[in-house]
Length: 127
Image (cartoon, rainbow, N blue to C red):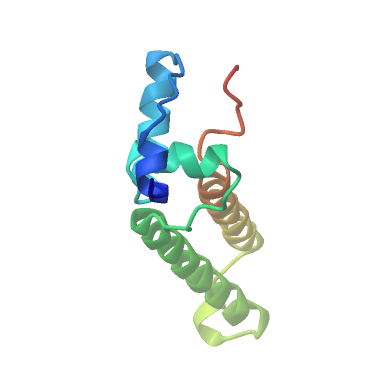
């Protein structure tokens, strides 16, 4: 008798795991984000394999936009710090507003990065 191929052996057994509708949706979303069918995704995760990283292009574009905003705000602050004549009319309130906008923009960037790294808010599904 011939030895069965790994694929044939793998298909010889099925595991059934009950999940809630929200868990099913999240598993399907994560599998799609990894570029894998659900069965392949669950098999790899269950066996402890690292999944290939696939970047969410929309999030990367969002990070690029936020980075551009930070660059423009930083440039404006630099002009003021170098006493550029174009910023002579800027008062303390304007500079404080620019600094606050920089802090807000950095917070936006951190929120996007957290969403990429912890896609489901760090919550864990019950077993």
